[in-house]
Length: 172
Image 1 (cartoon, rainbow, N blue to C red):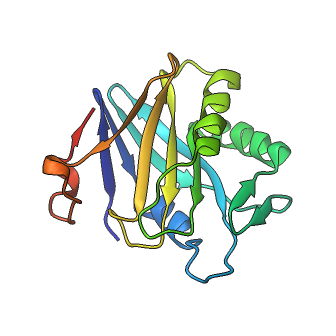
Image 2: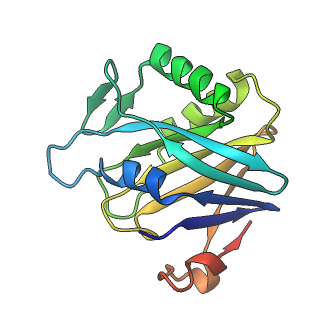
């Protein structure tokens, strides 16, 4: 398993192999597979977030083929627990039943609510969507800023990346 690195306007976001493995383990490979999701926790340093832990799914989440509603109390407990371990909540991840995932309007509204309602000093929050394909093609990552702007992954010449070009993406 390799590490995924995304760059967003001066911020490098790295997903550690263990966190990525957690997310990929819940891909919706079968026709009737339910969406899954969780939270991402990172070690923060200037200009770099390293996602060390991806949680979920958890007891009490409501899941279906095209929806995922997390257990909010369990999420807050995770945030408190990981904060004591020196990890900051930096966003959510969830699956989509598509090869190359793209966010829905509900996804955008959900992450906007998280940015607005969370108590934090971060410039924004991340949203990761896991599709059926292997990374990097099967991952969507976006950075949602406090001012409502969204930075998403852009590929050179509109081409999808391969593993060799994964670390050299251009971003907005």
